[in-house]
Image 1 (cartoon, helix red, strand yellow):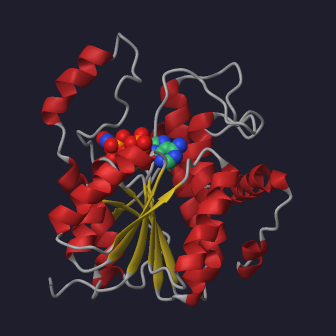
Image 2 (spheres, helix red, strand yellow):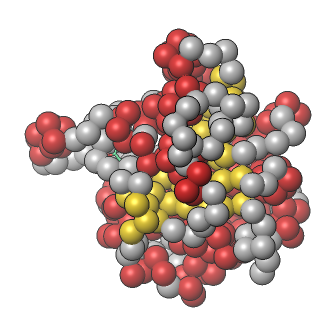
Length: 299
Ligand SMILES: NC(=O)c1ccc[n+]([C@@H]2O[C@H](COP(=O)([O-])OP(=O)(O)OC[C@H]3O[C@@H](n4cnc5c(N)ncnc54)[C@H](OP(=O)(O)O)[C@@H]3O)[C@@H](O)[C@H]2O)c1
């Protein structure tokens, strides 16, 4: 074990999108440090295959799987229920899953898919797990954002980008939402020992965006892969935020290459942080299921 690391042995770590790219490598690195990994993934077959690889490469049996599509709010409730039946603590939550979509798609609730998966699904998952995270303190929440958040511009009157969709606009907005959410949540968690930080992992040659770029951009993307770093390297900042001793009490920051850096000007807008919080609460509340955990937070 690296002396700078927290003792991760038997720490419970839940990672979304742990079957591919950065999430899978984060799972392997933390499992090697002794953590017990719970993969939250949408595709059973892909996830089981990745689980075998994670167990082999980390030489551990402590890897578990919960299936849920983050675009499906009911599936998130069910995943959290499954988690809570089996585990009574959660030391690290890594909101890592994400996608970019060439064509506009909607969830069953009628929400634009990129926003729903990259932000809203993780917003709901995090709130539903807050009681366990608070019970397990010190605990950590890590939101995998992107440098693309710098291009984000949220239109609260048209969060679903009706008539205004482009894949990059939807993606950068969702990644700005990750950072706004991080800052708002960090403030609401003051006084607890639950920390929350966001990060840019680097430009990584993973499965990300495969087949989702227009034919004009495809040759550019193909050439850029030559300059991309691999997923193992792309996992380094997530692993650092999850396990470094230096990060024990750091909250409400945005990281790149394991260093806290400034995020975009728009991400520090307190009004927008609050607006996004309220809007997100309204968007996940529509099943009339009680979000009792939001009562644990400072207003
Ligand atoms: N790659 C980059 O250069 C880069 C740069 C900046 C930020 N990021 C961020 O890094 C994170 C990880 O991306 P990656 O590069 O590792 O990409 P990846 O290899 O495509 O992995 C993305 C993961 O998210 C999962 N996912 C997508 N939609 C989902 C849904 N509706 N429900 C549940 N899981 C879902 C995928 O599941 P399936 O395998 O089933 O599709 C996959 O496990 C993302 O948040 C991305 O925005 C990546």
